[in-house]
Image (cartoon, rainbow, N blue to C red; front, side, top):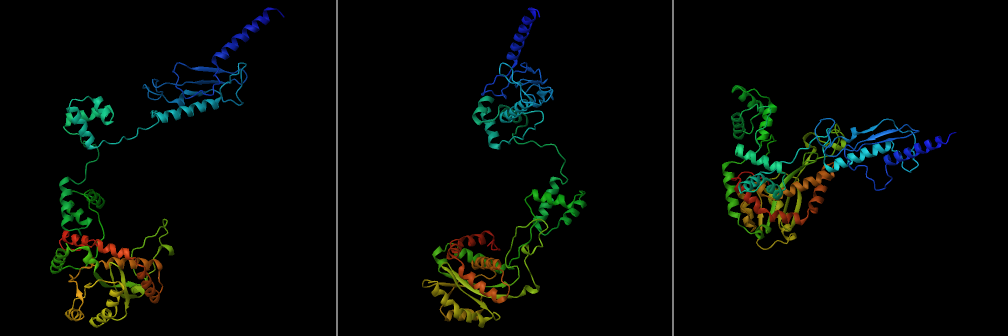
Length: 463
């Protein structure tokens, strides 16, 4: 072997080492693969045994998007190319640097995607999120500051709004003399503004007008619409179809009496209402709808026994109760087994009213409230020296005991009595459990009832 051959081998080895050393990735633990390099800085690695070729490009924000052709941050996923997947661990060169494999390229890709999402950059495959609309006050401030002589940049910094948005609002004000949202494109309304006013006025005059009636009215006027369109139009006007509430029948004489009562007692102090014993009767059904009941269930499970309320014909029986209470708590509660007439009512009061007043420790001069107003009852109460509160007829919303009846019926329904005897026992137990704080709160807010009657011009209120 000639002496020139070893020299040529040494020269080739030195050149190869220099090339590998210049192209190898440094093994720096702080190396960040997601750091943006310039687009022209493309490095190639080549391995002798594995025939592995990797090419990675890390474009900056001034790169060319491969999909749109516009300047901006390109899609890093398309710039990481692997010619052949490595089937063995990375080989190390004599200099100690490792050849990058497909795993390293994928890690670079994931790091770049993470950097892109954190920096808020948009890629060709991502969608622009809808920005938040500026309030009317902010738009007016922008116009006022511009008219005061401030620049768009100064307004943007002061209000924390993008400069482009500031400019757009100023241009809109100059062009359209308004900063409000302009009409957008879309299908025209099926019903004209005049038609909307017509159907709104119709249902305001007669709330029991059906959708079919309104469809026919518009069809006669030359506009053909569906019932769904009628519903959507009325919803946009703040009108919603609801079940009509059942309330006591009020004649003009009842309305006048209710207004008179509310105005006379509107300024009464709270202490006066705390010295009143309120009374009334109620009927509780055994299997009837004493109160609303809601259940949590899955779809198509409405007929499961746990999700139903059992009913029988004619309610399965009921009991009539008479009770009283004051701000200090509930009084006596008894079952009325006979038909309620004058004699029965007098017997109830004579046996239960005074004992209730003593148990509640009512002050001297306490007042009795009831809605039984025959003349013979007035005479009997006068002889017994009971001070009676003048009461307007057909006014259950003015009697706070109705709130206690509702609470009692809810508690009884939760215990699900199965017969009349159990129903009576449960009613007595739950009535005794009613807290005195509830009774006191009803008296503390009684003035609101009177205010509602006056505001509603004597008609039934929400109470």
